[in-house]
Image 1 (cartoon, rainbow, N blue to C red):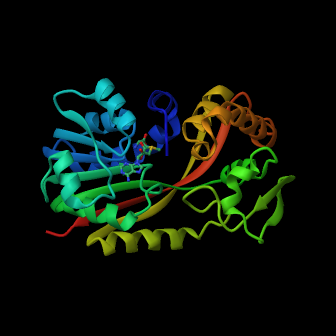
Image 2: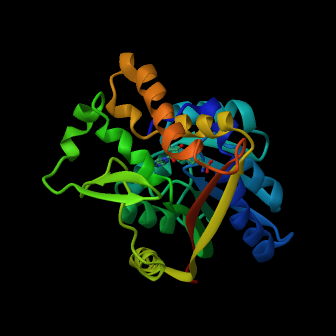
Length: 298
Ligand SMILES: C[S@@+](CC[C@H](N)C(=O)[O-])C[C@H]1O[C@@H](n2cnc3c(N)ncnc32)[C@H](O)[C@@H]1O
């Protein structure tokens, strides 16, 4: 991912909206009880870390992220006596993380991670590190993106004659074509995203998979559920802002061609998604998130 921090900070409305599911649960679980340390893994621009900080009674909040641009922005914009932000890769070796974030094993009461762990290459390592951050009895609240009806439509830009060459490494003989709502969708076995775009496992399978991931890191699942979420962008521009901020195609496009790519991408999304919506000027997005809450045994 290579997200521009300020643009992301101004357009992560839908992530912020979904993060309320975690924040409400934290309020229920902790009320005004004193918490010493909360670590937010993959904190991004820091606005959700700040929302979390304001919802519970916590002495110290530490946001960590792989991206130094994000951390520099978060530290400049949201740090205060209680909240700080540090660069760290959640998939690194524990000793390295521990040193860079200055946290020893078993120090955190709570670890949160919102809209991050579906991006990481080594979820097992990230979960093992989260386990090590936590105190015995400490809890981990994870929210990951799980599905959106937009994904297969977005993916069609990778078949566009001007851009298909940049996605050639994904090609295979097996390209299926199906029509959904009059739109012809081309599918290949692999997508450009690190998560499933064309075929989504059942809710039960997705939950079981995450319960298994928690257990394999010695974290005891308390609740693993899929939540349906609908988000309305107030206007087309704010939706386009988020599309740009989270465009995972861009790193594959040479820098001098990215403006042209974004123009084509917006035109494509306009034609196949935005302009056929009956809700304009608002844009309606349906998606699913998975929330996994787990505990480190005492
Ligand atoms: C979509 S943003 C979400 C940011 C924030 N939690 C939110 O919901 O607004 C995902 C963030 O995860 C970070 N990230 C991805 N892989 C990571 C890793 N291995 N370790 C730490 N952060 C990572 C990215 O740099 C990015 O800032």
